Amino acid sequence: MRIMGLDLGEKTIGVAMSDPLGITAQGVEVIRRTRKEKEREELARLIREYEVDEIVLGYPKNMNGTLGERAKLTEVFAEELREGYLLPVKLWDERLSTIGAQRALLEADLSRAKRKKVIDKMAAVFILQGYLNSK
Image 1 (spheres, helix red, strand yellow):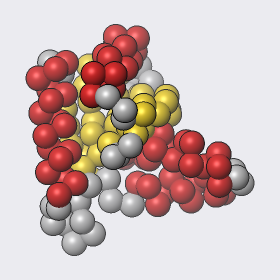
Image 2 (cartoon, rainbow, N blue to C red):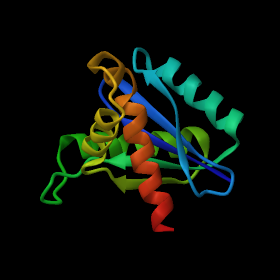
Image 3 (cartoon, rainbow, N blue to C red):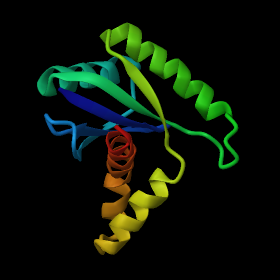
């Protein structure tokens, strides 16, 4: 059983995947959000390739726990995933996931340009790993 972790952004979707046992998360890729049809095809390809059974989607709550506009857009996207791929979709609190990813990349001494290319993928890893650790 594999679980896909997603970090939904305005311009990109970071993708992470669990190992078959559901213990660790690894970054897979970053999907550019140019056309809805194209991003859906990419997600479908990854779901088939990795035999995904469940999706965990980062849920952008405000620091005080309230829900803003981004959270509402995420809820709509989650419902589209459920209907489009017929898989369970869990919303997972993503507060501080991007900050954690940035710190990890800084500690790895990556240049700003390289960090920019992988930050969304790393945020997806933090989201998915948090979910896996909670199980």
